[in-house]
Amino acid sequence: MGRSCHPKCRLGRLMSWLQIVLGGLVIIFSICSLFKFYSAGFFLHNEDICRQFYGVKEAYEGFDLKALSDRVGEVLNRLESLQERLESAVQQMEKNKEDLHTTNITKLEYKKYLEEEVIRPLYSAHISLRLIRLPKPEGIRNSTMKEEPLINTFVIEEIRKYITPKQSRVGKITIYGTEGIFNTIGHACVSYKKELEEYMSYDIGSYCNDDWNLAQKLMLNGCDPLPRRRCLTRASMVYQKPYPINESLWRLPDDRNVRWSNYLCRNFKCLMGNNSRRGYSKCVGCFEMEKEKLKWVTNSSLPIDFLINDVLAIKPGEIRIGLDFGIGTGTFAARMREHNVTIVSTALNLGAPFNEMIALRGLIPLHLTLNQRLPFFDNIMDMIHTTGFLDGWIDLQLLDFILFDWDRILRPGGLLWIDRFFCKRKDLDAFMYMFLQLRYKKHKWAISPKSKDEVYLSALLEKPPRAI
Ligand SMILES: *[C@@H]1O[C@H](CO)[C@@H](O)[C@H](O)[C@H]1NC(C)=O
Ligand SMILES: *[C@@H]1O[C@H](CO)[C@@H](O)[C@H](O)[C@H]1NC(C)=O
Ligand SMILES: *[C@@H]1O[C@H](CO)[C@@H](O)[C@H](O)[C@H]1NC(C)=O
Ligand SMILES: *[C@@H]1O[C@H](CO)[C@@H](O)[C@H](O)[C@H]1NC(C)=O
Ligand SMILES: *[C@@H]1O[C@H](CO)[C@@H](O)[C@H](O)[C@H]1NC(C)=O
Ligand SMILES: *[C@@H]1O[C@H](CO)[C@@H](O)[C@H](O)[C@H]1NC(C)=O
Image 1 (cartoon, rainbow, N blue to C red):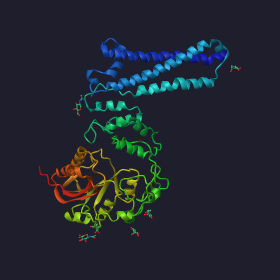
Image 2 (cartoon, rainbow, N blue to C red):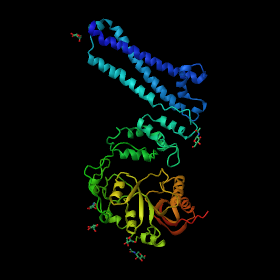
Image 3 (cartoon, rainbow, N blue to C red):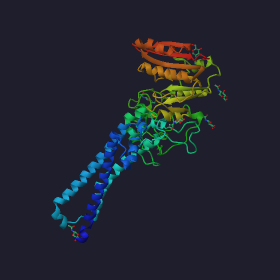
Image 4 (cartoon, protein in one colour):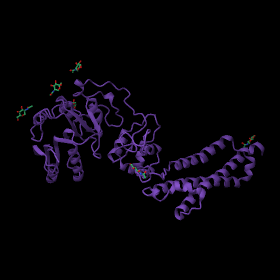
């Protein structure tokens, strides 16, 4: 046999070692389970390990034991299937004992066998074991424990790293007076685990996938906020410098400044209102500058269309900053800019590059869903304008939360401009109650029929002082 036996002998020896190691792991897990039930003090050597898993009594209060036991079960299954495969390989060899003497496996086959059948499963079991995040016995009652069940939900290391609270490097308390920095993700990320893990699968420092639409889908489904990523966002290959502000406000941007791969259209012309295959249905015609130029400045036949001049005349010189909550290409912000008013426009890329369009016009898009509290402080905005977004489909309780949030950021004396809200005629009373419950001062109020059973409502309301 001599040299030709050499790889086989090593293989055999290696496998017996492996079995010993795996057996040891299984024993440790079993002892830990036993320890949990009997809490006896005589497993001296394993006690420390077990405390890591189950801790002192308060250690696992609030700790998601189910997530942990799921993960441990996963590892055990992997180890078990590895062991089974190795054993069956050995049995196979045993059967072909005769051949064993006559044939010899090449080093290459031997290497391949080790790589595919042994090292890979062992590695993934090892990684799964490492990913188990154990409660630290000290400080358990403090906030650090609350995130653990969430962290244990995710397997992808990058997500886990992101949501683990980060302590300050210089002291126990951060400059914000907190114990750490808590990177947050929306709680519904848990229901979109697969998509989120896809989103967070990248090599650190490399280029991200061109997946803003996956990100937006996650956001819209409640995984909002999304985790940050450590990869480089792709940009248009031929990005041109934007037009100067005196031109950009009313000009379609350069097509080359947008990555079009995730849209039906491939240029701004294609997004025009008369194209039936433009890929979006909200804000039809918003990319036609000639039509946009008429909005809020020309008298319309309908009483529900207020003019910017009339609205600003109510509070001359007082309106300087505001929020445009809707879907559009920033035309309201552009007009207000001409009045020296700074408007932040919310934007979602629903089938068309609304965010890019607003930014390329030289205005500020805020990529925001309805899921979140507005990222503004209390009593600061001079104006909130809303159009085209909140319509009769909206749940009344959701609308209530949104209205109170707007009220929070609007300053006393600030204006709430509800522009062309529409709903079913029979729902009008409910919505009117919603808008009037805040007891704002009514500057303008108009209702017009939209169709046979739908109506438009526009209102200009002023937040009263709150000296309480
Ligand atoms: C086994 O190895 C010997 C040399 O070590 C070689 O001559 C022989 O061809 C090999 N047999 C097979 C079946 O590969
Ligand atoms: C928990 O944190 C608070 C301050 O946030 C601290 O006063 C308290 O001692 C901590 N408790 C434990 C058990 O560490
Ligand atoms: C815009 O402003 C620049 C200088 O700031 C000027 O050269 C240019 O002619 C202006 N364009 C228009 C259309 O007014
Ligand atoms: C569609 O719009 C473009 C540009 O606005 C215009 O040239 C064209 O005539 C329109 N087509 C139809 C069918 O209205
Ligand atoms: C709009 O109509 C009013 C009167 O209804 C008039 O005073 C005003 O000049 C008109 N504005 C424009 C821009 O046509
Ligand atoms: C906006 O500000 C500029 C410079 O301060 C001023 O010249 C212009 O008249 C203002 N426009 C309006 C509409 O107030």
